[in-house]
Image (cartoon, rainbow, N blue to C red):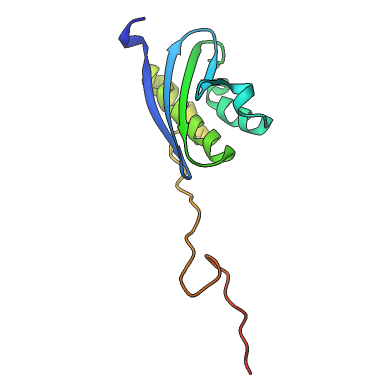
Length: 131
């Protein structure tokens, strides 16, 4: 395998971070050494990370190896989608326009809001007693 045929990108969503390697191949996806179906039992998570491949008609064109850390199922799926998108743009810069229109290029900056001191949660307040 030649070094110039391997494309690497990182993806992030919430607290999940992925390292994504995309290689020309038959469409195999490996996440942390496990298959896609084994790692994500939920269909919605699988659908989210397949979106950039389906949009660019590259489902059977590339083998994808992903290492993901942190977050939950939804955050990890979004981080993988972000990593795959960035790698596809490295492979073919012409794919940037449709991926950008779909909103996959920009990292989703939303995170859980921190709990504030003196209060029970991020926005929740203790009950006010007038008397």
